[in-house]
Length: 471
Picture 1 (tube, rainbow, N blue to C red):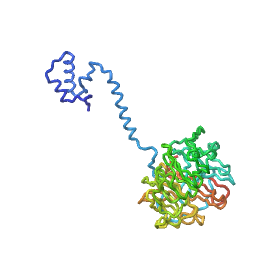
Picture 2: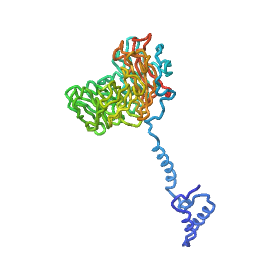
Picture 3: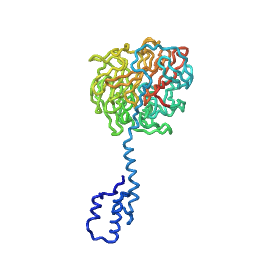
Picture 4: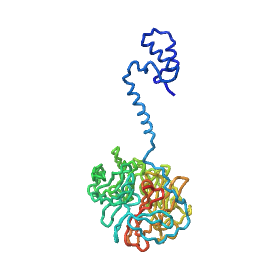
């Protein structure tokens, strides 16, 4: 349907035509043309667009209209940082049946096996050789960058971080031009794929590092910021910065715990009686902090004590509904009852717990050597975990297993995704798998000395590529 271009309506045009006027020749011509156009409904006509008198702005107005429509479409585009892929495609939820570990030959470098118990693909991505250790930095620290095109492993044998292609796993180079305060205190930016952050061991500078160029930008010096005269650390229970890259937590010796917000240059001192050699770590939102068994606000004041007996291996993340949470293994339950399990999620706002894997849900008593990873920031609510177990033979439920889970209040789904075949017998701490979930949740990285004929020869890194993963 053709429309009148300006605000002149059909009735006003007829009124213009029929109402007696003192018309000069040009106006009479325009009047008859208007009448002709309206009668046949062929073109949009007004006294301003009959082209008898040139309009210098007409072409500019015509060209601007489509641009306004495109702008509105761009503003409606969904947030590209959040994925909606169901990473559990083809996996079985809440399976409690036995799937004993089987003796499988260690895959060659960059080659795969199909886990015979769970049917998932496991790929070996390092090639250190006998007597070496190459593994994830830690479960709570993201191994992949924001778009999963790069990833980091730690070469413990040579004391250096390795940069790999995040898709092909090809070795790119050693990151031998940086020296983080600790091996796991190396953080990928949550949005910019080429940026890392770390606390320099030598200078106490918190540095923004551009991976492609090697450029280092000092964002703040923590010693100058606080006046700390002792040791500075971002541990011991190291977690990622807030998911907007804006907030970090750290401590001075065993005396004081701090947080720093870069956008406002605000230094917060926490009201904590016993620092316990542990920094207060920011939750993903940057609005809450976790320390030992309690949560704190942005002013450093106590929010709530979690229903948790004591600190255990845990990872900060989000539930599927966006709630800041501490995901932890608990062997003793909570002081108010309940909250015992291999994986328990604690709401940092209320301190209440949500069992994910527990005896109440049909699982065994929590397994030893449990580490949890809740750093799937592009798919909140998804977590991964590795359990070594007491028997370490992979026979009982969860023994020597890797799992992922989607944690949503009222709807918890757990998926067993493989046996990691790792223990501490020959390599102590370095033999632990320390599973790490990728940003989208479609892959899980872990270390293993591969039980069987290869047991104890070397620790290599492996990736479970879930059915939902698209290279």
